[in-house]
Image (cartoon, rainbow, N blue to C red; front, side, top):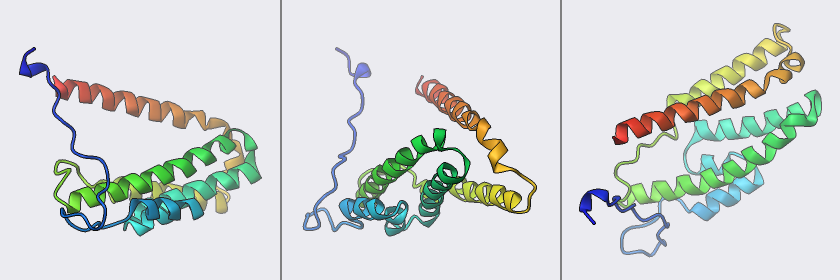
Length: 168
């Protein structure tokens, strides 16, 4: 077997305990996850990722609003997805912050405060403002939620194709 076929080893994924000889933890992943159990987005705020925290918080409560005011289906399915994604993200983000602070995981960019989070808040705010001013009817738009699934599916396929091309 040639060495060309071997995959590079992944860096360690486990969070190191505070008394580790490699340095102190920046954020405790279990605390971040526990805070997200209480209110979605609080774990991200604990990690110092305020834009991401707002998106999780507003996303969860926007789906709650949609379930109550618009139509339970399909929005009721989005609530657990956002909730559990927030838990996993809070834990993984705290873990990544710790690894980065300890010198591990050098090639990973910190995208937690990328412009995409701010753009998400701007778009969400514009939609809510347009609805409040009577320019947009959210009730009539709820039929078109599958367009989001189509868009995300296309985005994931595009990223996968780009990743395969860059690997070759």
